[in-house]
Length: 218
Image (cartoon, rainbow, N blue to C red; front, side, top):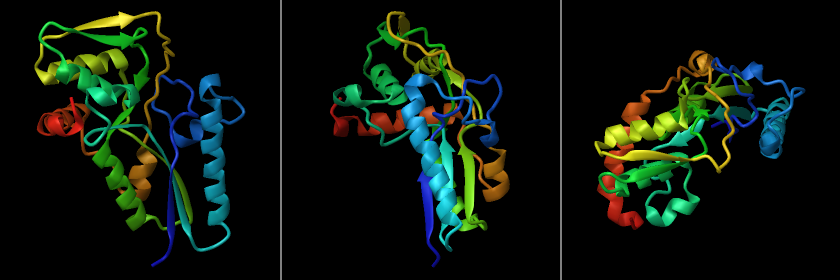
């Protein structure tokens, strides 16, 4: 069959926004947050390479700007805490906490993120391979809504059914950004949309954690 390259870009280039961000809302002349600029420049350059090479031959290219991915098979368990992202670390902390313990949140917890369950990402990849008719596409892939880190921790605690407190460490840095992705293009071009609400994804992840706890050494 024909060859097809899928490039997982990211959302690091997007500015904070009070409304869902479309692909064309990124303007490279506006610049990125300084701490994200190196990674963001690399991703945008790679997207441009995909577009360039798509024009040279028959290979298709899909660059997808995915939001924060979470779910089963992530780095979880106490021995992985140092290497975990916010979601996986929070699941571990909540699941290993005792009733009445406190969960520590860095900063103020105001930063808002778009969180996509992992199987919704893999379903996008499958649909892109099956349905792309053009040489190049650049699309957002996310849930389409954002939640604050503080709200996420509360939600994980609620779904776990545990009685836990939340503590904040204001000495740690917080970048009060808000990013949610407008994903209409992925739906129109590929027939893709996320199938898991955040609550459903958290419940599936917690169920998996309980089932596999011994294997990752908590």
